[in-house]
Image 1 (cartoon, rainbow, N blue to C red):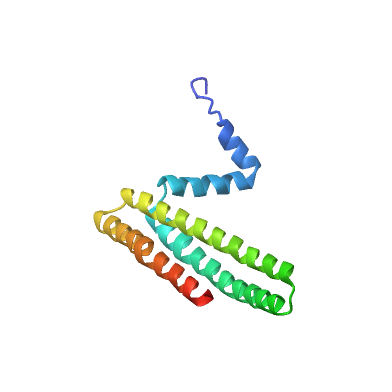
Image 2: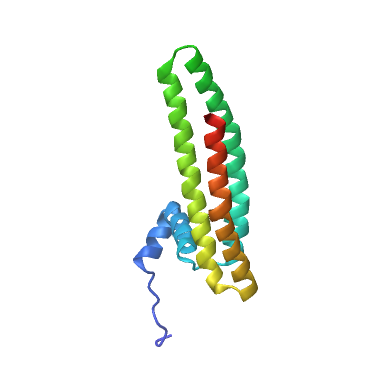
Length: 144
C-alpha cells in the first residue's frame, strides 16, 4: 500500500460530477470535436433526436403559423409578429442543431472504418448540398 499512487480527480471532472449539465455539454462538445463513435453521432443524436425535434417543430410551427394568420387577419399585428418571431426562433434552433449534427458526423467519421467514413461523408454532403437548399426553397415558395 505504500507504493500505491494517489489518484486525484481533475477539477473539470469534479465540476462535471457536481453539475449534471456540465457532463451533458461535455458529451455534446466531444461529439463536436469528433471524439465519440460515429454510430452515436449518426443514429442516436442525428436520426433519433432529429426525428423527435422534427415532429415537435412540425406540429408546433403549424399551430403557431395558423395563429399568426388568424391574428393578422383580425388586425392584431403585434400577436402576429410574436407568432412569426416564435417560428424564426424555432428555425434558428433547428438550423443550429442540424449544423451541429452534420459537423459531428463528419468529424466522428474520421475514426471509423473506410466504408462508414465514406458513407457518412456522402451523407453530410448530400444533406448540406441538396436537402437544406431544397427545404429553404420550399419554405420561401410556400409563404410567398
